[in-house]
Image (cartoon, rainbow, N blue to C red; front, side, top):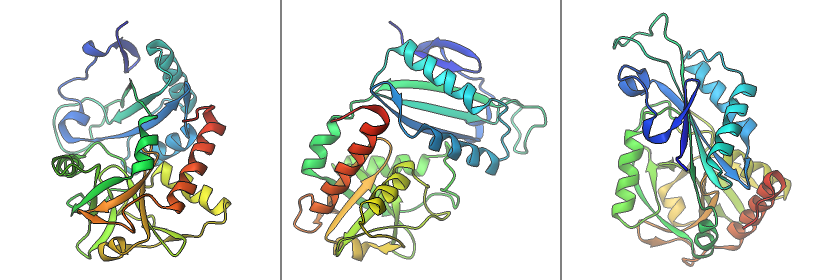
Amino acid sequence: MPQLAYVDGRFLALSEAGVSVEDRGLQFADAIYEVAAVMNGALLDWPQHLARMRRNLAALFIDLAMSDAALTAIAGRLLRANAQRDALLYLQVTRGTARRDHPFPKAARATVIMTVRRFDFRQRVAQQRSGIAVITVNDMRWRRVDLKTTGLLANVLAKQDARAAGAFEAWLIGADDMVHEGASTNAWIVKAGRIITHPLSESILPGIARASLIRLARGAQIPVVERAFSLAEALAADEALLTSTTAPLLPVVRIDSVAVGNGTPGPVAARLAALVWDDIAAQTGWRP
């Protein structure tokens, strides 16, 4: 059975799906995107993804006439057509197709793209037990990384550096030596029982998994501090971890080949991971 994609009102074989060469998403990365987890056939945190999408569209002045209900219906149909139970749903909205010119076109209609691919979330269970390594690189991204746009070249290069080093992720370090976030994840440290993460700003993406973890931690009376932390603080932390839609939470046991804490996943990360899995089960019925 061929994999299907949705492009501008049509469900097509993935191998045949495409956009115009003059689509502004291709020409300028003039587009936003969302990646949502599908677990046990159910979309995780879908309302939060839609809300972030609408915020990003408004910030970029992209007019999408399609309603959230219509997007949800399309997502459900695409998942059923592809017979996927554990997967990632990718939604992209571009400003549309127009003659290549930098200013906004007057008559372009937004392009909507959805794809879905199988994803094995169970692989994360073993990684939670062993922990993962990260490297650090200079943050070379543009100044509005709080907007989830498709302009990800700096992130791609950071991820490639991590892969070449045998690490899971690259943490992005600002000119002030502060840890901003990962190339595709939010970054956290644990010190004296408190979890610390960079505050919301134009320097980090407002991650859906980040917001969920803050909510769950506070509900469990685990202190949360939203402030910037330095690389030196991270290296001296009791524990470190990262979150993302695809992680959802992984302990970081090495940073640039330096062990974090005793070099193994710690108790706070384990407790937080249990809270995350319980939340996922409550929403989708999925358990590791």
